[in-house]
Image (cartoon, rainbow, N blue to C red; front, side, top):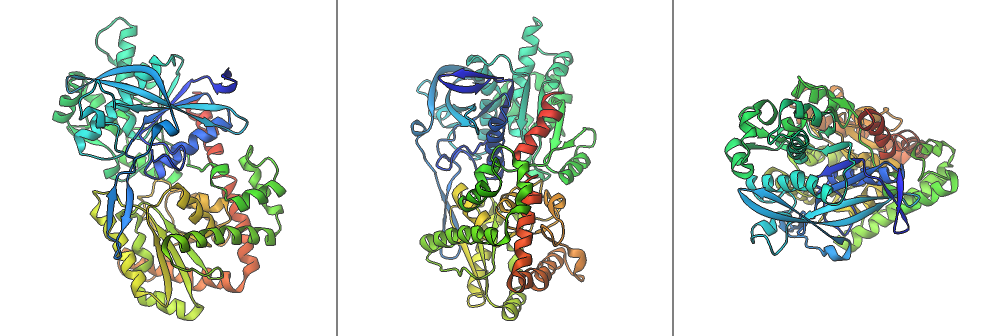
Length: 570
């Protein structure tokens, strides 16, 4: 399955993984958040497992954005420009695509994901910044999730149609599965339909070709939130693509009078999955006529384990990087050693906070962490819904503190308002509960927070959380979660063993927000704080169980083995 190339083992590419964003290295802003981080972790695990894979994405020369926060939490954005020459190798291959009846030239840059043992997976980052293109077309691969609907659709043509053509130009003719990571990549299917028709000597494709394409495509949907599914007016789709088949094959390309990328992917994929068991259930309700299975997300163990815990695992669990499931032997690690490793991870976080914000958090105080994309359904402000209740809890148990981070999409005013509410609450709680909001949330900050806090806080509005992976990263580092029962936490929560559920059924009446916040405060006051301050040995036992039970299972090695068996080998 692996061949030698320039002295390094390179995987023969039989699975093509397409994603609008992929997190490859911290200094490369080719991702916005969880979807991109998952894509990168997927490739790292695939390389570790020697899975035959190649990946395609866009170069995103201006990244997602750099976040600036004013004194009151007002977010502003600026481009996150980076130098591809410092990380990538430009390839000589060129392909052409047609956008709005004009020719656009596309090149690719190469990056290699190196797995444990040295096997690499090639990643091709598509780029339209070429002198042959118009000034506008040169910008099509600049911004991740930037611009308007037209810009987004043009980008998705570059990714889907341009990506397949680039693979062919680079000699990847042996692809037997195309994995669509979210609907952004759905236009892969259009190019594959054209290939199938040409192979049969036809100038246009048929339902027979659709069946052939369907047998080769795997589709992973990541969101039950309507805004997460790209859809475009037919007039715009016809203008961009100029393809009569969109009208001639409405059962493939249309849903409710639009080009809906999720439905296009569903219609032309033989295997479809959600990213947690609950998410698959919700997706089956949303898309009732489709068979949707569940493969719960994971995180790449070697990437997200902090230095202090990596050293600890090296001592007590040799081979943990090769075999993620071996983390179950965390039960053999002395509690004192786990506590010491955590204190070191916490010191690294608090040092970063002091240097970047000037805020001095205390090593011996319970520290909660919340770092997610700032958007309405994730409810970052649920923790500060009742300031007087928080003050009363602090008066009873003593000072505790919280660390926040997260970007709001530039066009999401509700998300931006959530950040401002956190800042407002932090000022009102001063002297009672210390809250710090770290600006410009990125990969490195995520690593520090998930490992360095004492309890991971997560408060999505069910059933809108598809999976979530931040709590999985925390579990690898012995950090238990306090979370609403949604996404992966439904599977990972063993009450009082791996963490705690924010269960509104335990709270009295009121609005959903009032019940959820009351349940959060009850758990914090009556369970979490007493355990942390009064029963340190029991808290350390929970940390060990987080690693042994959740860290050993909710990882991308297990996830990719599931894909290999359920999706790729069918």
